[in-house]
Length: 164
Length: 164
DNA sequence: ACAGAAATGTAGCCTTGGCTTCATTTAGGG
DNA sequence: CCCTAAATGAAGCCAAGGCTACATTTCTGT
Ligand SMILES: [Mn+2]
Ligand SMILES: [Mn+2]
Ligand SMILES: [Mn+2]
Ligand SMILES: [Mn+2]
Image (cartoon, rainbow over all chains, first blue to last red):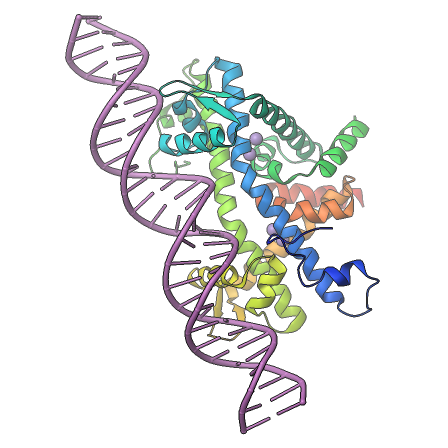
C-alpha cells in the first residue's frame, strides 16, 4: 500500500482498500493527485544528481578527467556550485575525489550515469520521432528525461522499434 | 543574442557569432550544453507556480473556492507549505487572498492556469498516443509538462492531429 | 626556478520549498 | 448560543542549490 510522504497512511487508506462507499469519490481523486505530485517532487530531487553523474561520465570518457572547472562550465554554474554538488555526490556514494584532483565516479555512480545517458538518448529520439525539431528536442529532453518512468521508457522503446 | 545567467556574454560570445575559427569546437559544444541546463533550471523554477495556479483554477471551477487545506491535500504537502507558496503566488501577481478566506487567481494567474492546463492535457494525450499506459502517462506528465517548450508543444499538436 | 595565471577550496549570503509546533480564527452541531 | 473541531496563520528549523569574495594550491611559460 502506498504511504503518504509523512509515513502515515493518510485519511483515506480505509476508503481506498475497501469497496468504495459510493461517495467520497472526490477524496480519492485528491489522493491520486497528491500521489502524482509526490512522484514529481521525488524525481525533481534526483534530477541534479543525474545531470552531474551523466556529465562527469561524459567528461571522463572524452578527456580522461572531469575537473570542477569543466563541470561548472558545461552546466553553466559557478565553480563553488559545482564543488558543493560534487560534495553531495560523494556524500551519496556516487563519486570520489581528492583535493585539487579531478572527480571520478564510483561503480554506483557509473551505473547511474549509464542508465541516465541511455534514458536521455531515448527521450531525444522519441521527441524527434514524433516531429519535434532536433534543436528543441535536445533542449527539452534535458528537463523531461528526469520525469520519465520505466514504464514510459519501455513504451518509448516499443514505439521507436515499431516505427523503424 | 543569448545572455549568460550572470548578465555577461560569457567567454565564448565572439566564437559563436564569428565564423568558427575551425578549432575550439569543444568550447562551443560546452556552451550549448550550458544553455540547455540553464533552460532546464529556468523551467524548474516555474514548475511550482504552474502546478499551484493550475490546481487553484481546478478547485475554483469545481467547488467555487480554493481553500489552503484543499490545495495542500491535493498537492500532498502540509498547509504551511501551501500557505508559503500562495504567498509567493501573491507576490508574483498571480493570486490574491485575504486572511482566513480562500485563494483566487488574478487575470494573469488565470491565464497562466489556462495555458498550463492545456499543455498538461496535450502532454498526457501525446504520451498515450505513443503507447504509454494511461496511468503512467498521468503520473509522468505531472513532471514532464513543465519542460515542454512551445516548439515541442506545437509538434505534439501536429502529431496528434495527423494521427487522428 | 619562479612568477603569474588558472584551478580549486572555503566561507558566508540568499531564496525556495519542505517540515513541526503553536497561536488564532472560523465554522458547525447540540 | 456556545463550545469544540477544523482551518488558517505565524514562527522557526532544515537542506538544496544558486551566488560572491577571498584564500590557497597547482600549472605553465619564460
Ligand atoms: Mn537533465
Ligand atoms: Mn541529460
Ligand atoms: Mn506539474
Ligand atoms: Mn499539471
